[in-house]
Image (cartoon, rainbow, N blue to C red; front, side, top):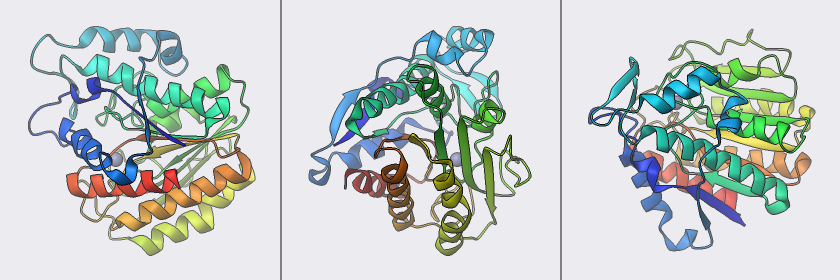
Length: 305
Ligand SMILES: [Zn+2]
């Protein structure tokens, strides 16, 4: 059974009318999932992450600052493209809380989950909001799996078109987590070179502008998935960004909706081989509403298979 974690509060984070990371993204996804073929999805309202859960990966003064910063009207700017509105702190708590609850569920033996949440998380570092991200949702989930459930090997597979610099920052010295990323280079945030390898637990695989299905699949098949299989993860977490799609306005890769079904299937194979089928995917980027809705639909349909 596939569980879908989301929360209405995630629609209330509004970085402003011109911002690509808009509430319309989540609305488009929820509309796409409100379809007969997804009738078997088990929908769960995401809880808030606790302060203790956030402090496993974020500095205390950073968490306090984010929670205190939300304005009573309008927006407050944290960096050039990361803003908070009155609903942002609650949305960020629910987004991180979704990933934590999904891990609890997965490790209770119930398998797989998708977290349809925003703001996204993978650019957030221990003490810095950036790239539309406030709390690093997938990192909070990985730390929870380790600290609360005692796991010794957690994999994070990140196929967002941007490098997950925050996730890398958080875990690059922690061999209990393997962080594997495909991303376009050059592109924001300009990190993720192959020679950034942590303690052997970080695998960065850049793609060039214009690369598409062939290069993406070859990279995962030839370089990234073998590393993940060798790591033998007890849990597979996915930073599921859909902005490498050819229609996406923020990058120049040329993936198709089918590529997202493919990578999802391959990551499920990995989870079945080593992790008892336990996989938790959480939404990162994806900024063409139609492509995003179709790609999430393909991802979720595959997770339900
Ligand atoms: Zn992205």
